Image (tube, rainbow, N blue to C red):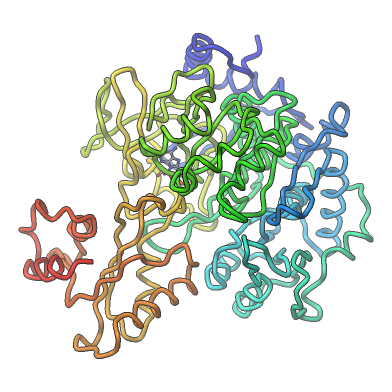
Length: 635
Ligand code: 7RM
């Protein structure tokens, strides 16, 4: 029996049980039946969470692009693989068929080779949401180079850190990007970043906005002329199952960003299998995920998962508000989108604009709605369900992480009955556990705890680039023999999960994970700042916004505080990017600290959230008097 496509609840339970009782047999069958292997594996799974070490399909040989492109040519050569919708609605959309994708990826792969890129080399991709982004990702995979996509909203400093951390030899970028009514000068951000990246030998530049930019001789090349000369045949590099496919950076609660390493075979099998089931993808569907490829959602569910299933995946360059807040609905109507996958922050922003813009468009093609990135609040869930889904299209609230590679807890549409704000049941093969403060598993239903995963799944990140010890410490040290997610969750009376949010110092703002430490480090670079602490507070649209408490070096600082606030946000923009700007900045003479010198963020969080009635235990504070001062001046 093929378990590739689950259609009923009993089937879900049956397949789930099998995937837990006989995980190796289960994943072996999925891998065997649905993918193209150059050589089969010697063993399905080897693992030890104590080390930690996980390998799937050891000894197998394959290339993921043969699975995402070549094998579809026999039956889907003229089917649209990538449907590109530009920022400007008056510019035509572009359909790239599987056959065209094959040629364009091969040409690009040959350009990479000609520039000296080999298997195992790292290539940084810093591009807007244009076809070249997906094509360059696939071109790297074609020749076995490890791509490291950096979201094009990150600043030059953030780009420098990411390029240097994994020693990228090449950067692929564009002359600029369109974002709504704005244009962004990407190339000069790259130029700035590369001042401190001695390892980068080559920059390939795609033309998008036709702006005048400076090209550094011997380093920078326009992409198009190189593609024009390149052959459209390029043999796929035969990769080992566990060869790294990509690195993707995610912020941690402390220190520099973590370069999560995903490998080839397990990642492919899991993203393909989840895509098929979580979106109930059918051959003629048009699937649209609004994420940026700069995030894991774009890697797994714009590129690899959909293409591994021979799907049509829509790539949108623009923003939900341009030319107006009806743009998403206009696109759904224009392309008869069947699956629509977005983030709660976008849903809340759209809900605020009212339903008139929805009613002007025909959304009857929609079958499945998805949500990802942060907990979806009840109000947003109902608005999405009632107005976009017309109570007919199930919402799949998909919980997962950069580290998990693929969707972990989610309803299967038309299979799992949904429940507002609940991600519902673990996906096939996933074994969640809730833990108490003492590291013990909390069994039974109607309980709440810290969310762990007990058993490996094929797309778990294998390490942090260059720092395996940090990988162990971050994910495998808190709970013995478990992967710790950093999230809290509750399990209701029927066993459905609701993710309650981060339990560490990561704050999710508009669906972007932001660690507090790197933002504090940036603020502390301001010459007038002595110390700072960042917390999150609830925000109608962003989910959370950032509140900064700042101690100035000169307590009697006479300069205008509003100017200082602007300068602080400017520094944050330069170091991380505009997504990390603070909504509120309060200047204070001190921060509440424990005797061991730790800032008591719990108190600062309560003040920022205006929950000062009960501040909890403040007896261990070294300086309790500062709390009143902070409350009195709270913003
Ligand atoms: C896919 C992605 C991961 C963190 C994760 C959670 C939060 C993501 C949901 C969610 C509640 C969801 N990767 N998160 N999805 N919380 N419900 N459906 O977002 O690495 O960027 O973020 O996002 O806190 O740990 S990510």
